[in-house]
Length: 267
Image 1 (cartoon, rainbow, N blue to C red):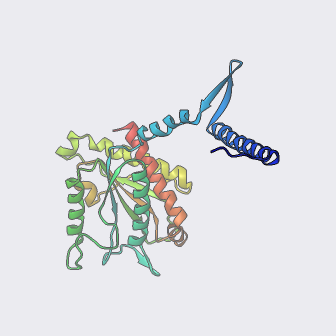
Image 2: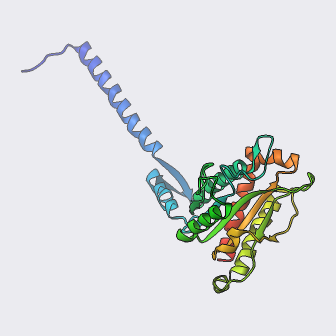
């Protein structure tokens, strides 16, 4: 069957067909342009497809994180019926838990696996008839069972005077037979130095040196570890600072950087 079209309709048909073809061609060229770019190298134009840029995004997954493969113990001091320092509704156990959770986030982002002795206000021995030593024994045993590579116990300091201030890191140097085998006297000190250096640098409000601390959790564990007193809750100004979210982030960041420094210089 043959269709006969008058001249005017034929002209319109051809015109519309040409316009449609032009639009399709423009769309194809535009798509190609958006998915490629031209660089000039040594006087020559080189067409580079966006497909060439997929490789960096694939290989970034293979970049080793600073704490990749480490198991790190984080021990927020006190909790529940044992709040530690307590005044005007401020509990040491709450503050150190907030800082510890912030530290955990940073450590995990750095590639570490984190073992927490508590993630809430509950203790491992949730019974006020239990002794503090029993709680500490369970915390130490948790780190031993999880075979942590190092650990940090976080506390708040307090003294009779309201003027003392500043974060400070403690280590235990006594050489048990097991600790001597692992050279932990040196490792504990080095970890403490690395963390205290970062606390001084980042917080810029303490010049306290590292000190020996005869704490149960430091004595009982054979792996490198320190206890960080994040500041003096007995100092009204520092107590207010320690309740501030941003300041807590700075403390967590300082400890995180100290652990990275230690890991890449001592382990």
